[in-house]
Length: 232
Image (cartoon, rainbow, N blue to C red; front, top):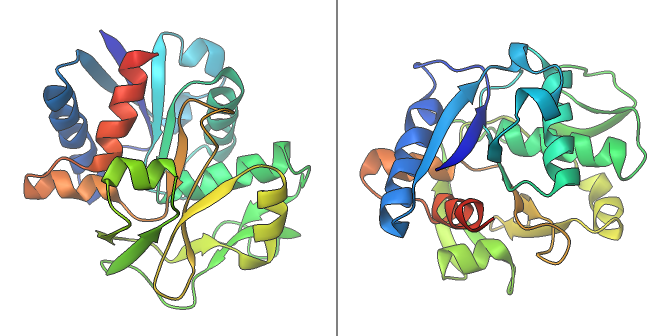
């Protein structure tokens, strides 16, 4: 039985929090694998090697600002450095960018405009247009893990967010090895990943693919994530 930690401040009022367990359940059933999951509240994250011991993968869930942002960032770093499969959606993706900026790019002041609007290195900034309860057509980078998961060059997905990657830092992220792999019709970044030869599964999306489970569909990225977790 493979254990997945769902990192976030669980609330039944958050659509994504209701969807994620269903997404994992559907993915595990389709793959015929024994996978279980449990919520890890951010307030309980103090020492990831101890607090997440036994977890084969992490899903950093929507719902930011988190109660314990340092704990979330530490968990993301632990997953990245120990090669635990990680999927971050919406706020999870945003905080994966912050962690990478601080600990790989060396931007120690990297931060989120929602929680620190006057920060020195805002790698996550307010979107020009809100994406709360909106859908977009997305285009995937050829050869990316996201494209492989969907088995298509494009797809339509939904959001609930007002913040996203700051375009000014794109080149710095790419030089450091992060690949941006999904874009909207205007070319704005909507997903990122580390290459398979660097990390078994480190994927973040601004959109919320988990919502498909509430409509009775298995999210392709949830299936891809579970497949890697169960193989590891």
